[in-house]
Length: 365
Ligand SMILES: Cc1cc2nc3c(=O)[nH]c(=O)nc-3n(C[C@H](O)[C@H](O)[C@H](O)COP(=O)(O)OP(=O)(O)OC[C@H]3O[C@@H](n4cnc5c(N)ncnc54)[C@H](O)[C@@H]3O)c2cc1C
Image 1 (cartoon, rainbow, N blue to C red):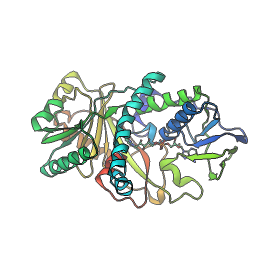
Image 2: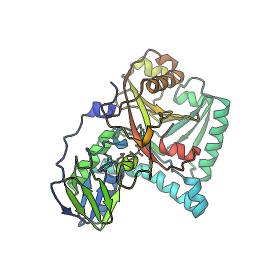
Image 3: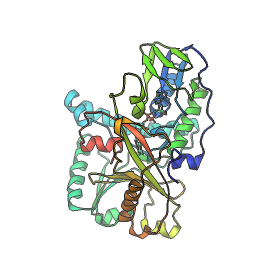
Image 4: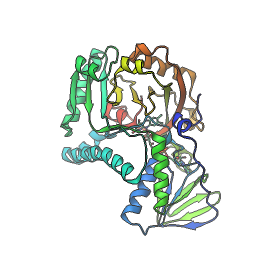
């Protein structure tokens, strides 16, 4: 299968869509976009101030964007950390990093407390090197992370790496405990249900065409609020006046059929770490709850004119390239079927310079 939003929806089912907005309305806070950004914001607003009237306006359904399509790496990467350190000082960046480490545990905690079964397994993140150049980058990366206070990160040689996972040609790896595998759609569906139960009003199939100060304008009416939060990430270019605010960047994934016991034995990966590498166009992967490998990376060509996708179809050449990475990593899986491919959009700054930190923190190959 190719498209159909993502494998995660094929696995867990598309949601029943909530009622659209049906006329002008008012709220204390209106949130445009029902992905992780919008829904977590709604969650913490309601927890901090339960009396607030919070309305979420979502063009399709909650989790339609990257939040329902991603690789399920819940981890502690900070986009632009070095720049942050330059602007605010090293100690501030260390505190930010610490907050990101804690965020992984916070998501795990909230999911547990709120009864969201998101297939979470906290096995950390393992990043492997498979060439001498990658090993040099890995060591630099490792040292850099330690300099931001990650005292519990570990560096492994080839033998120690193979004890965790048998990636062909792996010469070393760096592991942090601050990472978990999640089922992205179970997380976003669960979060939407939780915020709704807290009293947040969610309108789906409600595209916001324009955000003006204190107004979110839709074809069905306008919601007025002192605060309007734009949480539209890779879709921002579709909003009036925002065409060039963020670059919509496509990223693709594939997932295999479930692997047999023997195949898992050949691979290892008992710790179910989120897995990445040190290539410039790097990969990211997870061992799914139901025993598959989901793998993304390398990016896909820019869609001319900043167009964003809808169904999530990905090009055959991209699927083949991801399959090649899978087989290069695990030659014993050469005969394994890729069952589903899909893509999604992230929003990245137009002046983006591809520093390793930013690359890693945005999940783009
Ligand atoms: C293939 C892929 C793999 C990734 N892997 C990882 C990973 O493993 N780990 C990681 O940390 N990150 C990963 N990411 C990035 C991560 O998924 C996103 O950064 C994150 O989900 C963004 O959440 P968001 O809520 O800001 O945006 P989105 O999830 O895109 O949500 C935005 C929402 O706003 C809605 N919307 C947009 N415009 C309007 C409008 N005008 N009116 C109303 N609603 C609107 C959309 O329909 C959408 O539901 C990946 C991304 C992709 C595409």
